[in-house]
Image 1 (cartoon, rainbow, N blue to C red):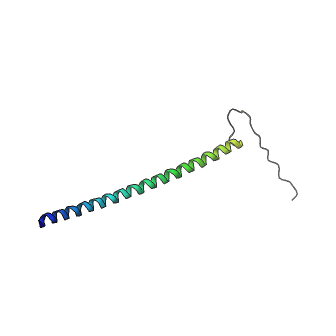
Image 2 (cartoon, rainbow, N blue to C red):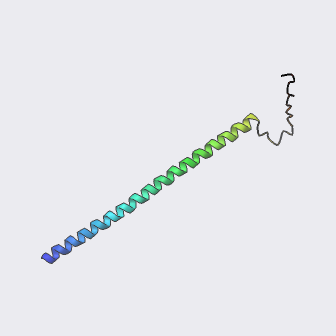
Image 3 (tube, one colour):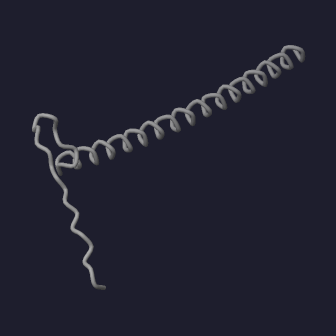
Length: 83
């Protein structure tokens, strides 16, 4: 009977250790998933900001469309003389 109890105790100890190891692995996977989701969100935010910047520059006319065919001449005034 003592051998049976020792075997049961040893089996229970092994099971608890195995469950503890599995829990540690699950915790690592969850942390990795959280970090990956955070990185994906950051990339999405950067992409959205860049898209908004380029859209606003295009709307402001800094990137003229190729359809217009018009050229814009920029004239720089000469430096005033005297001072």
